[in-house]
Length: 222
Image 1 (cartoon, rainbow, N blue to C red):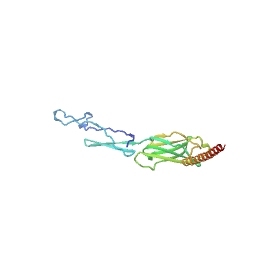
Image 2: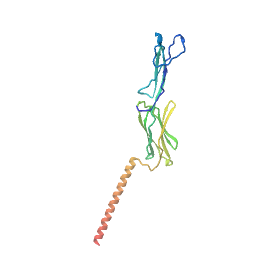
Image 3: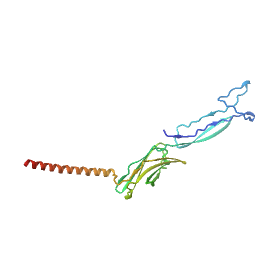
């Protein structure tokens, strides 16, 4: 998945085992054999551990190091998410006595932590949590909401907001505002209006043609 990876890389230090409880430590990439044929001194090294192919939004990585028969371990928490690439609110549609709002939130993960909110003039008119979605891939979300139209709705601004709440980390996205208008037509209303206009144009052309024929006939008799 091509989404943003936030992680903490844990570096563990292997503690040397020293005879006699000596507190001295020697740093070396490789243990070197000292003179006199005695056994090599233990060394302290560092190693990096990289997590690959993350498939969940939150996971624990455990690392263990064994030195001189002593094993030590530690855990790192990795959180993965992808904030909304875009939040798009379509122009409001007035059909009958209802306004219909349709909001698109694209390329977001994890969806189950997403909350989509619609606001009118800054006030929340609808909010929905998508916690029922448990998919492990990027997703596009579309929210559709209809509400009764009122005379004072004219000119009011509506916006769509998307929030990812990840254990206190909030990722936010919002759409451009759209104005409510009683002049906004639905697809069915546009089709009806187009039919009416076409019929009116046909009537006008027929009347004009009849008038023209009458005029030409009078001219020929004169």
